[in-house]
Amino acid sequence: MHNAKMPSLRQLRVCLVNPRFRPSYWTRDEVLPVLPGNKRNWTVTGSLPALAALAPDHCEVVLLDENVEDVDFERLAGFDIIGVTGMIVQRDRLFEILDGLRDLPVTVVVGGPYVSVSEAEFLDRCDVRFIGEAEETWPAFLTAFALGETVQTRYEQNAKTNMETVPTPRYDLLKPGSYMMASLQFSRGCPFLCEFCDIITIFGRRPRLKLPAQMIREFEAIVRAGFRICFLVDDNFIGNKVKAKELLRALVDWQQANGYPLVFSTEASINLADDEEMLDLMRLANFRQVFIGVESPRAASLVETRKVQNVRGDSMIDKLQRIRDSGLVIQAGFIVGFDSDDDAIFDEQFEFIQQIGIAQASVAILCPIPTTPLYDRLKMEGRLDLDDPDVSFHPKSMTREALKIGYDRLVRRLYEPDAYFRRLVDGYVGSPGFRKNRATVAALAGRKRSVINRMADVASAILMAARLFRALLARRRVLSLGSAYVRHWRRNRRLCGREAIPLASFVLLCAEHWHFHTIALTSRKIEIGTSRPETLRPITKNEELYTCLTAGDGA
Image (cartoon, rainbow, N blue to C red; front, top):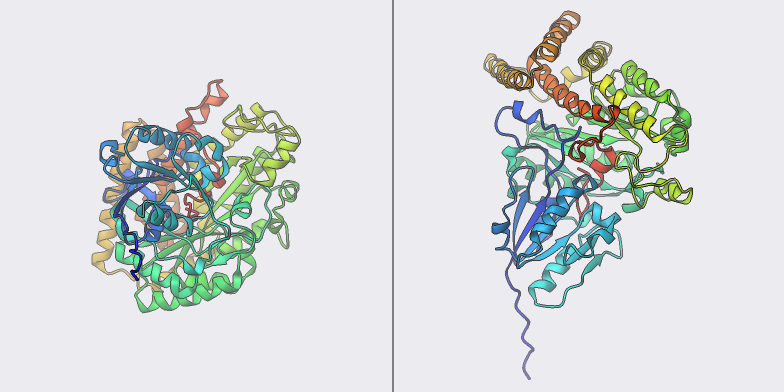
């Protein structure tokens, strides 16, 4: 009796492609040329290393991030499988790449957020579609393909991924010198019910989390790859507070044992302000920034969109101040266009943002994303209208044109240099707790600077300032913006003295303002009656964070 011979696995060459992002608030395109080195992209799209880690041993995987290097279609012809991922904001370039692959002798597969919510658009554009999470379906497809078996044209997991089984991403396959920071996911899902958010429809309301030991291995992989900054891309880092604290305690021990090799940022709901222990642990773990979805200063708008966590307890201003006092820089997202918003909302948003002093404020027009309760409600009410790329619905309390014009004016007001730097400096001056706690973190991380290190910081600041000056000179903005930067640097020194924002940090903040200001100016064309270039359309936080990964990634 002879044993049946097991079929052999064919060695596969697989290329995973992340399309280029169009310029937006989040891409920091104007900042990258100012930084030392040759940075090409702000944040790693976590889908690439995560999917590479899921590939079986019979696969040779190459990562191609078009934000770092160009797509060479002749080179792609040498692969067996081309996997393309993409968010809504990458739609146009995603389709261009798929069109370019159409005649190549390769199998083209697509996964990620956009195909997951708009599958019909991809039926004739690829060979295989992956819907939702793909920790199980992606390796199963690769194995079936290598065995020569018939593969499906559509894959979708029957169950949510068990995050404790997810392998460590292959950060070693990236070009770390081309990025400002790595990205990593601790959990998926959010316990809240915000009407406009697609997270609960994709990942569910019950957060699923990795184990602390699992996360430590991933932090170590990030450090080995050469990264020093890590963005935890969870849609709500504190969705499960008990588990978040378990991770933070392990992270504090790891940071202390290894000399604080990583600086962290993340996203969290505003009720972070109500948990002093969580704030203390984040500070001790070397978290420096947190993104908060504030959305609106109007309680009616927050209640309407079910953002109830923002109206519970004391005021949002008090909550945000506590978060800042803990030593965290706050980035915040705001939305205009709710049913409760009328023409007065734009001034209210501006005054609120100026009052609380959030320098990096991201404002977006409400965006009904398919699969969300908002999308379904607007469709049922007959108010969904996709003909306008900027406002894909009919607002209730103002016209579409009034919403667009009000939005554009608001964004330009926020990023006029005096408005931006007043938020920045006044927020810094008005929070002695922030300055004290940041100094404590610096001491814990061993950042008491030697003379040589201080000289290196000054040299880095001078290099960045020179590059920023050249950028302003090329756009003829030296007098209008450069002079404002110098004026507010002097104000920072005058008000804060020895505790002033350091020169290198201030120059970087100027470069970030230059980027935000540039993006804001692209909106002027709506007001004068012409359409904006689609490649420069400001994007919503939901679009940006809508996981770029079939295997889940909030970056």
